[in-house]
Image (tube, rainbow, N blue to C red):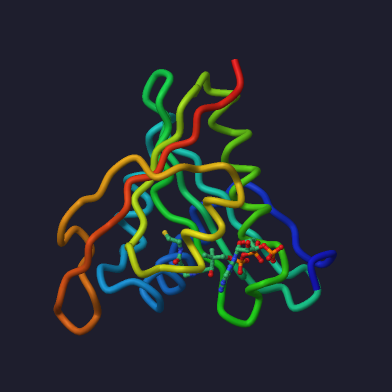
Length: 155
Ligand SMILES: CC(C)(COP(=O)(O)OP(=O)(O)OC[C@H]1O[C@@H](n2cnc3c(N)ncnc32)[C@H](O)[C@@H]1OP(=O)(O)O)[C@@H](O)C(=O)NCCC(=O)NCCS
């Protein structure tokens, strides 16, 4: 239920759970240490969403700001919580955090066959800005092209 979810900045003690969530979806999962070392930079923001009733982490997003450019590093929602507006909410909050850091343009890469991800980003105003051939590693060992997408924020 969307109303039961809360989005906030992740704590270090939650990185293990984030690594598990990430590894359940992506072929190249991130370890808790990798998340920790990314998050250690003050340019990086890591947000988590929790189901406040079940007391369970059900999504997270990470992004990096470098001067006026931002990059979405990852965003994911646990399968049983999808299509309830949580991905959109995480993306909106990440975008706000990047704007506060002075970001004016946000970039991201998404697997070219990832219809849900591409639909979410398009819905939030991202446009296709390029193609990276064989950029994404798949769980079956193959590779897939990635779309580069960008969003120019209002000045
Ligand atoms: C992509 C992802 C984060 C979307 O999260 P979500 O919580 O299900 O998304 P939302 O419910 O907020 O959906 C927002 C909009 O995105 C689009 N969308 C999301 N999932 C979709 C799907 N499966 N098919 C088509 N459109 C979809 C829709 O436009 C939707 O708006 P609507 O519900 O009003 O139609 C989720 O599917 C996920 O975690 N996927 C695996 C990880 C991943 O691929 N991350 C993105 C690349 S890094």
